[in-house]
Image 1 (cartoon, rainbow, N blue to C red):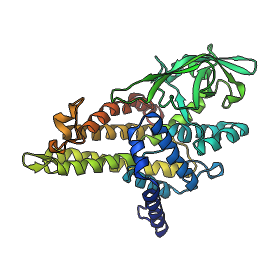
Image 2 (image 1 turned 180 degrees about the vertical axis):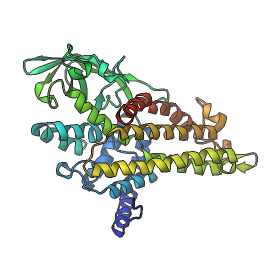
Image 3 (image 1 turned 135 degrees about the horizontal axis):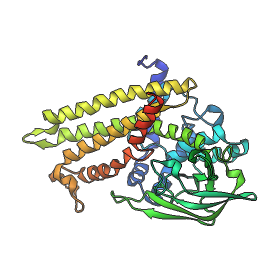
Amino acid sequence: MDINFSAQDLEFRDEVRAFFASEYDAKVAESLSSGQGEDYKEAIVAWQKKLHAKGWIAPGWPKEYGGTGWSVTQKFIYETERGAAGIPDVVPFGLKMVAPVIYTFGSEEQKAKFLPRILSSEDWWCQGYSEPGAGSDLAALNTTAEYAGDNYIVNGRKIWTTFAQFADWIFCLVRTSKDVRKQQGISFLLIDMNTPGVSVKPIPTIDGKHSLNEVLFEDALVPRENLIGEQDKGWTYAKALLAHERTGMAEVADSKRMLANLKQRAAAEVNGGQPMIADPVFQMRLSDIEMQLMALEYTELRVFASMAAGGMPGPESSLLKIKGTEISQSIHELQLQLAAYYGGALQGDLSNQQLGHEFAAEARKSYMYGRAASIYGGSNEVQRNVIAKAVLGL
């Protein structure tokens, strides 16, 4: 694999850097840093509209549907520069999850209706997969959709639904047949969140933020035209979506940014008369994470190159998900260790620089929320089973 950038690649990198420097202003950065509230939604939509106006909102989409047509190298450069600039990724549920399902399996009418509004961020989407008792074993879901006339009547509930409080639409896995193998009786529905019978209950998380929710369906009528593909074939579409989701969960660019921040903090933090960056044990832990991250980056590039050649993400997406989330958690752990006992404080002013731990609150919150990374998107234990079955034939 040639890792050298061409002159055109370097020119593109300069264009990306210049765009980020001019368009990602302090006001947007401040709003996005909160990660919650209506201000957050307004800020992320405003930023995504800037990307859309530039034509950069959907690097992974086919060009005929509004994608960029970028090469693997250009996508890599864009992601690297985004991470280095500390810019959060786009909200994935519309652009990276349901959109590939719609343009791959949806009807022409569905493509025309939904894809332009996803591109322009006019519609905010959330994901209706997990249920109480059906998380890692997703095929055990119990939310039902009974066909009646031109509608489905949906009853049940979904849980851990990120940003459902903001969403205009939810894509859902629902059970449409019961007397079959459980994976064969599932359908993929698109549901308007303003439908009577749909309600949202907040689930505050341990980091003090509100991003997760429970979504309830009580005799909600969903038009037949909102069914993706064929009835009872939703498991096929769901697996394709999960493969795309898990491929993106390696989050190499964001981990590189976190690691760079960690190095800066370790250079400023003094322990026993010397900076922590010089401590042999800390160096060993840091170097181990850095080597794993570098190996993951090249693995991700190989997967992307295969996808660019026409392949679909397979068990490799599970590998990327496992290692990416483990590396992210390792960085969170090391950051919390660097903050030491200040990282355990739950209240009070932690911004006093005399303490030398102005990042302690961030370290604690990111560590706490980051423990879920090896669970959401399909637990890492299940991903190992996927790899064992698909690669090792076990």
